[in-house]
Amino acid sequence: MAEELRLICASHEVVEAGRGFRFTIRRYERDAPAFVIRFNGRVYGYLNECGHVPAELDWMPGEFFDHSKLYLICSIHGALYAPESGKCLGGRCQGKGLKPLKVSEIEGNIFLEL
Image 1 (cartoon, helix red, strand yellow):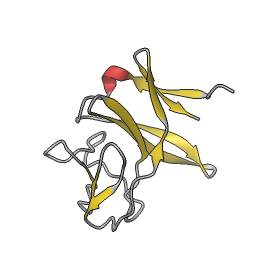
Image 2 (cartoon, helix red, strand yellow):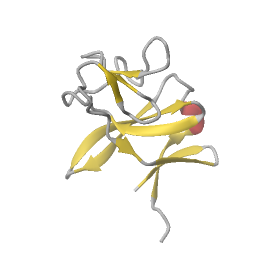
Image 3 (cartoon, helix red, strand yellow):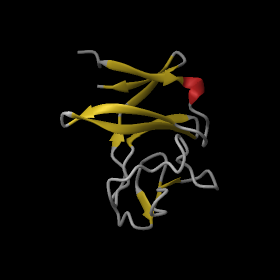
Image 4 (cartoon, one colour):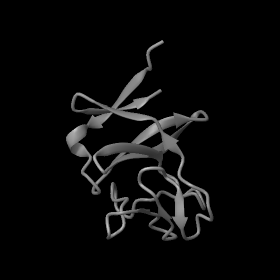
């Protein structure tokens, strides 16, 4: 059975260790904020929710990386996450990582795998 795919955005809209792309998914019968970022040439998707409390991570729309461009950072608590896994690396996330989403990059577009 083939995976069902939903188009998120064009590949060029997600910059390496830079601006991510925000989108919405349906989860538990409600819309939930999500995002996709690019790190080390690969795309990664997560729910846009800090592991500490349900607050959105980006400090400005689409800005998820800290100043070093090595970590994702919660704009409210300063919790740091590994871009390639969503694992909590420090701060108030207390070991609770980001919730990953399956995303794929195919022929110049980024898709959510449903």
